[in-house]
Length: 442
Image (tube, rainbow, N blue to C red; front, top):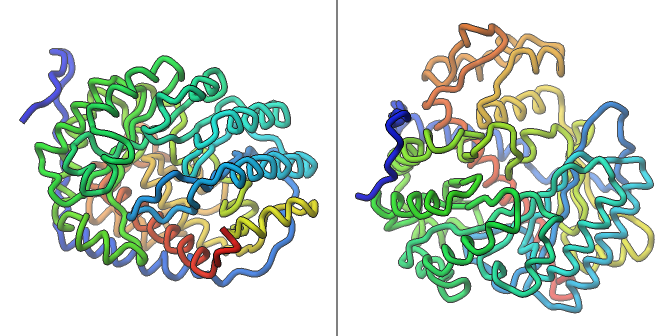
């Protein structure tokens, strides 16, 4: 098995994950219960976003729902790319940003997701330029792309506009790429490696997205993926577990997913390989610096506002959902209305549980945060959650700071599982919202 050689001054990391398989399965069932209960589609109609609250910081999310090809295991909101529809959509996206500006918002950060955000680089560049003009406090722009667009002539238009480019590699192994129908779409692992190496100079931060948990993804295959990613020397590497939703369960669990029991072993291998080379930013994100933004923007921003079809916003303890119908979205914007279509308010206990999940996932669980944000004692307000995490050795008190909690390797494993189930639940919501769409909506 190949491995990265660490300098003599760096001690090899030895992940101490002791959670047995039954405990992992139990945590997944608990999370599925809470996710199913709290992510039910019991929303009410909405016409407008709320006004911003002075003193709060916000992030802007923009959704680009187009892809040249649709991956079978993906339940993100996306449509097959058609240039005329995509160009009209980008124009509407910029108009919706104008409406957000009129409400009084400003943003410190912008994240553009998809779909494939780079389907039309010229339109994407115009949209970023427009956002920076409207919202002068934006300090960083993060964007996603697949390997197909890295060597396109228009890709260089994003230089100087995008601070962080996240590239969905999934795996450098050609067998895994063939199994997931990616090798014909995006090329071999070596071709992807070469494209990323050539594109590195365009952006301050390149992030390489990998997925573990595929069937046939042996320890050797995972190590090869990690070694290839490390040779690229990107500023960030993200290692997602394969996520199975209700909609993908049959196709993914039977054909693509590895046995559930492999997860802890594979995650231990990832921790051992990347810690020492990178700082751990979250349960599955690794970076060269501790203070750089990454995919899970919800960690750094309690509140965010989404524009575009199928985007979500979380403002004032309320989830807002933009229409998933492309036709309806275009009609609303043309009529001077925002894209928001539904809303759901969450109670204080539910929001605290959500923040607890994020604290476990990010490794930033703080008694001070809960005291200042909610006016509660974390240990008593979330007694069940804190007691269970302490019992399995997932958290421990920081001897240097009584307000801080240390997330152990067991805790990182629990944080990964919790966030995986949360995102699977969000994907189920997206799939349910897309289910009623007819041909005229796409």
